[in-house]
Length: 430
Image 1: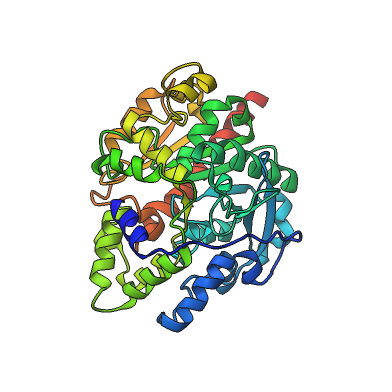
Image 2: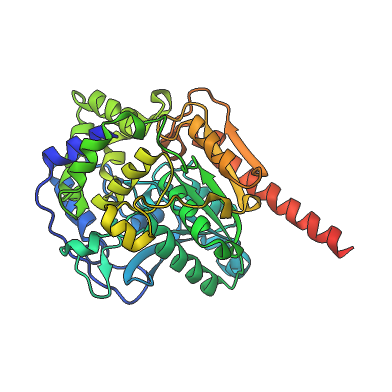
């Protein structure tokens, strides 16, 4: 993970980008819906290797795989305008009102693309093929979601957020929008890596909102980060000091940073360096990584806020997801204590949860997952541990065998839970 910080700071230039509010959902030019990706695509047309997936938008990825999509703009309670995607299976279009909605929450440094670029094993397409109504969020600050009702992304105040606000506002607004759009009272949510931070935050602090969920699948549940794994292995204090210097996006110019990284990854001489970077920064099993596509993966990395990263490293230091540490004086004013309170994990309903974790996860270590299990008020009913001894953190998104170890298992777990629920309903009816 530390390599990403150094690379971004060394090759970034001052980031200049502003969002454009688009009222109507549906196909639109990438220049208006994602100016950052449009800039990166222009850069790669000059220096890339011509792979059509390089810096492709989620709409382009969806259409290139034979699906259609709809784009929805969701405004959060605090004014951020999210650009979310809905995959449309043209063969199931007539049955859309009966398709169970599934919301996918992407990891840190990614966007909706995380669920799409590893086709045919990509979970977004797999679920859409099997008759689910697939929705994919793009949280605030990603290259898709840089609009706001009154803040400009060049204003440091725009970037004054972390996974706390994402969980409380972005996820909440998106879930309510999906329910209103589909008519379903309960939906399925799948969060991966930082997506689990957001769900753990929301479920801890808004326990009443859990009634909106049928199932919540936490892939690499990250309630604890401090003792083991990549976050705990880097110098915490220097990174916190670096991130505290200014408020803004990280990296400052994601189009140039990740476009340049993609060019390096496409070169035969520097490709091994890229493979090492992905292995160390994101936790990949080298045997599961398609080395010929590292340029595509690099081009589709996305940005976040410095405050979000700072909040994560604060939680690493405390070894527990907690409120943001604003300093002792402000903490007393906000929380009534010198230290920020820990999130009350006991509020989470374990009956809603499905855990998925790996034995060799170098980002969210299995020992940290165990601490989170122990922190809940009861056992999680379904707790799936991938038995491949080398399965690593990033393999869920990019592994060559992602279908066998992840996608097909997710589908089976959802169906098993649905069957169990139906059985209980039938028994209670009798």
